[in-house]
Image (cartoon, rainbow, N blue to C red; front, side, top):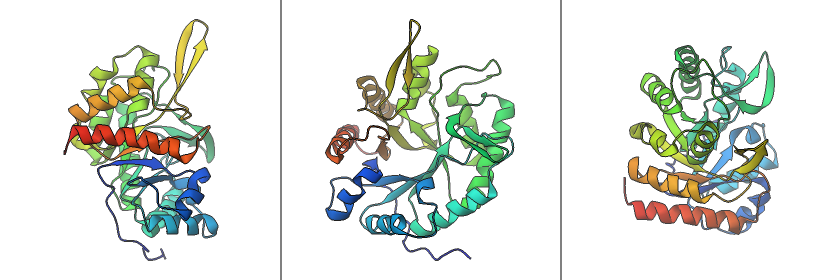
Length: 286
């Protein structure tokens, strides 16, 4: 039997939020912070009890919450794990997040989990697999799922479409929403020689329910520059420009600033969120 929800569902506001990381939990427990909402990685809270869940309970009382999972493996041909769905459902029933999301990727096979979000060819066969998994996930979780565009570093010979067409078809078929990661879009296009603004213009606006922003790293591979989605630095200027374009083309949406490696003091992350909030304010209402 699932525990009764301890919170009412609360919509994530049309504002900028940040990812809640362990280094900043004490800041939120000891004083109010100038941020509209928080997002957590779901898998960090799949425990039966203890201080981690108790801390999140206290923080959740003051801030709307979004839950972002990283291990549904929506691109896996073997399907999503029933056990993982059940554990996520318990967490979501308890905290009643306003948004839930995962990635257009796969991350495991035969019960083994890979510590990365792995790409899949964007074609009709993959669409069948992902659509089936998304439908099963939404049924098991009892909620609409937002599917995030990944950061990509190569093209498959088997590709038949790009991310915009694939995700539009997925949303139309399953009723899922899209989490449009602006940094991932920029990284993917730079790495593969595509125009990010042109691709952005073809994302289905009605399906986009949330934006992500983050920093990336630059690596030299022989004489070429590779961008790596490491979430370890401020949002880059080109990504801010692309985000402003998204606000004009698609409209304002709840926007999350992610920072997962080399996590800075909380005021640095709040400053990034304030910059996103200023662009949201300039864009006006939906």
